Length: 73
Image (cartoon, rainbow, N blue to C red; front, side):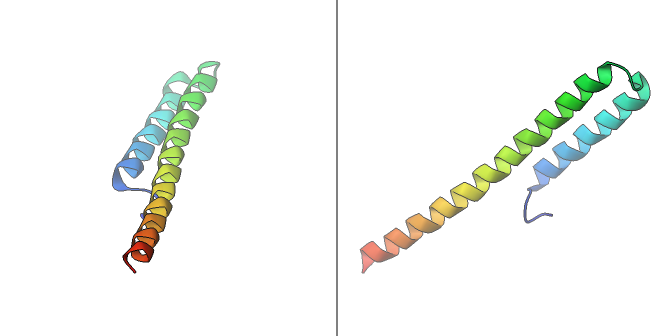
């Protein structure tokens, strides 16, 4: 799992999940559940976007390194 997410993302996911579960027990399964679920999903989506951004940047860096090697020849 560390290969996909950095430590900070894992901490944010754990805290968000903990707060979501706590809200379920405090608020119960009422209308507020939809609000809590929405906030949880937004947090997960932001973390996933950060992962995709990191993956894309790694690919770009690899391509730039290839171009640099080709130009040095």
